[in-house]
Image (cartoon, rainbow, N blue to C red; front, side, top):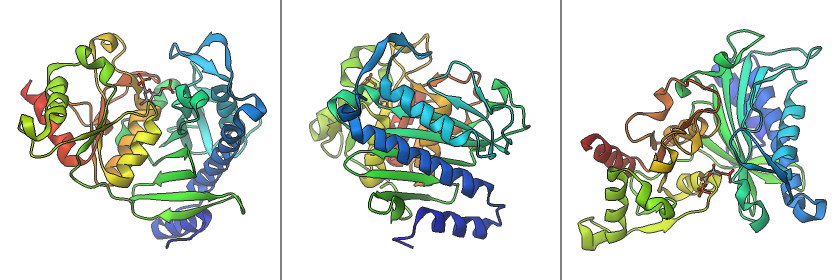
Length: 332
Ligand code: AFP
């Protein structure tokens, strides 16, 4: 019911499925961590949060921003002691993060990107936190225990730090959005039962990579650019925000197709976006909202991961446009 606090919503969901309350408490703690990250994002230059950290690169080969590290610390410190997790995997850590000795361990694993879109920090554009919750097979997990297909996710979500801070969440029963009311420090249900329109005339891709794309992707994008003059039934609009959370949020709000496809430069890496803490959670959310998510050749949620920081090509959004692009890939 619109206007509910996040905790009320989670408890009613827990009662609906007869849950123990552990997932409710974990998601409440995740929301608390996102509030903390959002606070540091909003403080920006006032807290010296816009700086890069020298030339230090993370496992992704990207120069870390101070906010990347701070967001990661907030997430890890907010969740380590709660007793709901057996382990964590973060974009910012080469290895999985064990729960410190002395803290109780729980039945879940979490994979997260503490601050996605960080190339936008210094230009004040929307960025966000992405998370994926899995069941832990034991309470002393190894990296292999995180390598579960996206269909195994128990919950997934993201928090977008934009003009408003909004938490998007699915536990497998649809997608709901909660806006942070800063006056009371609560996430309030403002976007119940989000559904993605099946059709769209808006696509999002980094066009500067055009010459590196595979033929099916060039064919699709060239047709969108040509619009009605090129055989499509309508003209198209383009967006590119360099922030996956912002792109996916727009797709959830009004439809669209977002893609970071395979290209010649990325062949050896497998793609740009990371499977466990970007593609899988976003694909779970998009499918739960009635959309589609594919690499172009297979459903993202069906992929059997082979490494924690594995990358994949991503095409997601309005299902009729994604289906067309997938068909082009299958035609070759
Ligand atoms: P950063 O977190 O390094 O900014 O990467 C963001 C991202 O993973 C995803 O959120 C964007 O869609 C994509 O990369 C942007 O990539 P380009 O910078 O190549 O456009």
